[in-house]
Length: 473
Ligand code: ADP
Ligand code: MG
Image (cartoon, rainbow, N blue to C red):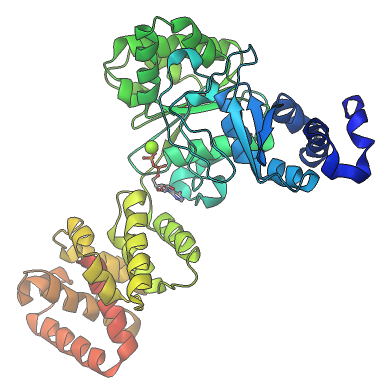
């Protein structure tokens, strides 16, 4: 704490102490607030660059540092400064390389606390700093917001392990799965977690496309050396959607060398793609084989339960606009391909309900999501109806064909017959045959019975309605 001496002596006359003294006190308090490790990594290198009209300028060596400091400490620095000096109303961070020339790009307004800018401008390569390369992390993509189920449990567990560890785990972690199943979400979650828990570790997360673009630019500016240095200085490198560089040989070559260099130096590499390493077409054999050496974690297509879990979690984030459980179940049944679509549908429902101030119901859902739901339209078969109805009433599918007459199986069987009549073009005798060779009059009886029950019993009718909607748009 030796560098604090002079600032602390004039405790009573803060207003009149020099800005340098104030800065020293701010630094001392920052150190106390954020702890030694974060202070050393991020705040110690900051220098006071100027002060005018209530605006403090603080210099940062690199743009990466600046973005980090702005994102994590700007508010704290500003409020500490304002406590030291009531005239301070904003703090600006400027990039200065410490060699006497300012690297502040002329066209890029520097962020201030009153209105930070975050737009991405591709800087000339020479002044690129490490995490200028990376993608901005999506604040919604954190572990807490990731719903875990059978299809993604391995990918999730592996990602958590890597995020918590300070040594290399499996190298690389290869995450693969179809579109919209959470690969990018998990990668960002790893990055967020490491940033919070191990801020001294350098994490770089970018798409393979961006990797390629940087590589091409490095070639054009004849600056591949700093490109290589940059990538090889990270502790954790994540490359998303690696399939993008299929068929792009020199980018693959460069990636392969980067990859090997990192692995040799015990740095963690995480890669995602839409296919497994062996199925990545247009990739060099040695790269494909190398990618499979670590842990390959496959994210499977979602199950109904996972989809429902995701919908429930997202719906909970909007407590003011309740979504009936039936609607969530319905969506989970109907939108099966892609979590992004599922989320999109729910968001549309909620946003519309909020706007027009109307309750969400199955009817309004159907109306509003007509287009999305129609996409998943398909002809339903009697087999599917039997399966779905049996599942719903918790009986065996075999009981759809059996001669058992107990109410607990007869009623669901009648419902299935009714739905078969409603939803398929099959004739009454055909339907009868599908239900254990029953007569067509049995089917007519079933249809009448269900209609009767529906008009007498509201909840029964809703149940039948729900089944119908699950089976058909
Ligand atoms: P991918 O990169 O595999 O194409 P994303 O990670 O972009 O998919 O996921 C698509 C969307 O679905 C994102 O908004 C993401 O938050 C969401 N998502 C995917 N899987 C889950 C999950 N298990 N829990 C919560 N949200 C998820
Ligand atoms: Mg993705």
